[in-house]
Length: 334
Image 1 (cartoon, helix red, strand yellow):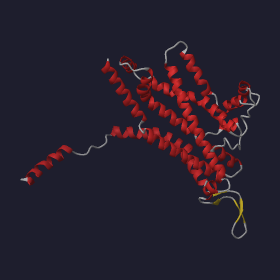
Image 2 (image 1 turned 135 degrees about the horizontal axis):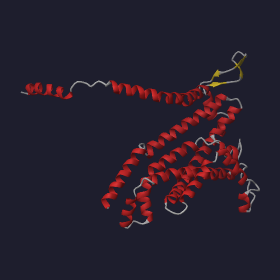
Image 3 (image 1 turned 180 degrees about the vertical axis):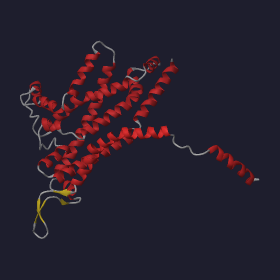
Image 4 (image 1 turned 90 degrees about the vertical axis):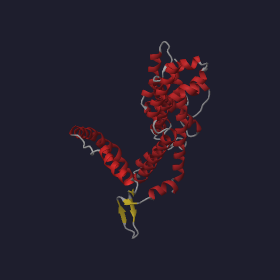
């Protein structure tokens, strides 16, 4: 009986599955057209992204210059060093300088991104309110972010000069451009002033997609301003805020021009990994410079991967689902 049932069911299942569909000529033509349209972009990305990374990785395995081999003969040009450049970076004579630059990079990134996130949310909340002159305020907020970083560094260098505005306001003679804690504070202030508007604009874009019905329903239910901010505004704006913070982390980890112009090179308190790699390259030490650049690239990649995995991988999908939920809850209350 079981064999008869199986023999009857098998043909039916095969009929239900049916023959495997072949791609239509229109679909194949669309796929070829899509590949042709995307290929120039992939080619450009390969030239400006993939090739420099591979070239830097290869360069970090070689040393250049003049040396002596085991037989005492002079050898010029490139010589394969393997992981010798990386070993010299971590444990060599300049290891203390590398660890100091790594600490400065991490410290500047953490401090500036946290301050920019807080100030950016405040600025977005202010710009989101309806008041006279809101357009002018939004336009003026863009000014610091639109100024080139080198020009901004020169501006703040004049402000933090020994006879500048800051010392005149404080009534002191602090050497902000010298080495030490004042130099760190000057870099943090200049960086936050310039890039906090970027975070504010992205958060403002997230605020504008939140339905007003949700806030009206919460206000009717008796929620105060703090409860509306912590339970409605902040959760719904979280995807946009995470995107802004991610962009700022990736940018701050590559900090170079601001401390370089504002404070100067070879200053221990503000030297970053990018500045260290540039210094080695200007000294025609391309192998160690490539090693520094490769380490910085790996550091940035690991931080970005950890940030996305720990704080939300599907930021756009989360934003869509939260807005959809907010709209449903607003309709239900209404």
